[in-house]
Image (tube, rainbow, N blue to C red; front, side, top):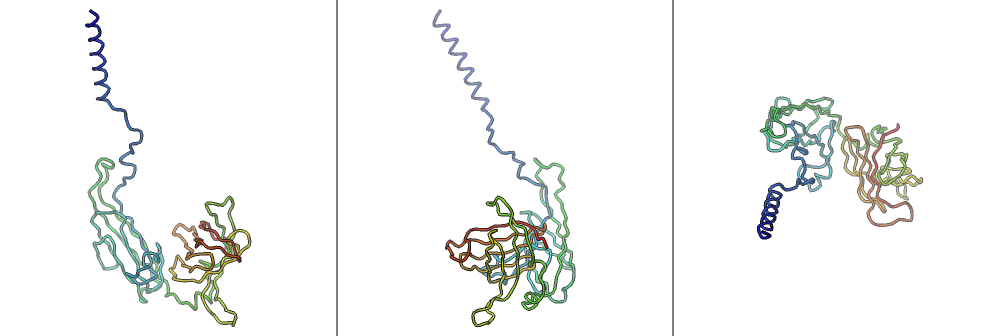
Length: 267
């Protein structure tokens, strides 16, 4: 009788165990498969290129923008991958995901509409009501060609003035004044085009970097003393970004650190 009871108990345990295995616990770390999904979109970027197309440093010196200097090349790129693309630029129709165009003197002073139509098979699981079609039009403004003389002899409202910036590592914001100028050596000779940052560290220090390539919405700077190559950028949303990267050396003249500011222009 004892053997029968023991067998029954063991049988019940085996059944319970088998049922338990058939119902594994839910993994709380499994991500929602639709969390990163999106409906079909025709959004695209327009980037002004400060160097020649195909140059080694092309990727480094291009800026997302809505305004360009006349004569510059622009990279147009559809953000949706693996889709059908139809671009309308004036009378021109294109079907690439990415392409380049140059906007020369006859277009200076004009605002040009750029339209992209995208068609793609929809994600039926996450967006069953998506029609797989989207269209967006953005305008690009072509200004006069860049000239060094005008850049340094006329007030540059996009860059010169007072700013209020905040670095993620700082507790408080800092007010920085920015000016453009021509560097002068001990013989009184002009040696380089400069951008000057007053109170860049919040402690009254000043640093001046040589200017490199320039786009309408971004100026690139060459490193000086304890700083590497940096830049000042005016984003499409109106926010300014300033990068003054530390190059790993120290200086007896200024505070050396990595500065990555975001902020706004006060005047």
